[in-house]
Image (tube, rainbow, N blue to C red; front, side):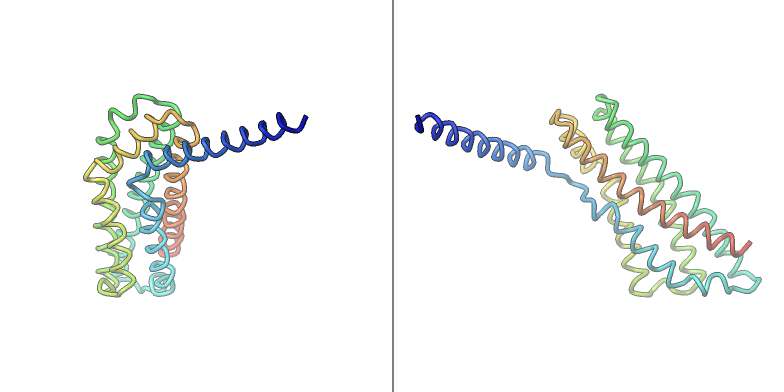
Length: 202
């Protein structure tokens, strides 16, 4: 009476092991080109820099520097908001557009163009404040440059989308969407802080 029971346990264990191996193989096949860290780092770093400059910015007297800073903050808020919209589009299309894989490269390039403008406005802001060569500023701009460069290449994002949608596995598709959502959350926090600084200068 015990033999069939033991056989069933052994069979179940083998099946679980096989499923684990298949799952691992699938994850390896759909490894992501754009990591969550890459999507979050520019915004986390820039937010840290901006918070360190908060009192300096809000304490600026009327003059050319203040005007330049207000302008840069305005365009940064607008540019990051546009990037958030593009990111939301990515998330929505991953969830509901099987044809997204065919245009992923174009969408990637469009996002890089938005980040080009954001990068330029950060340069304007830090230049006006004369902190462009600070170590944390350089690191923040490097993180942003890394992201825009990868998006401009098209292929990394295209590979991520094709692999996820091509897998047909909901968990993998959702995982990619969540990765972009987490990046968007960090961008939104940065934009909100920029907006708060700009309002204090109005």
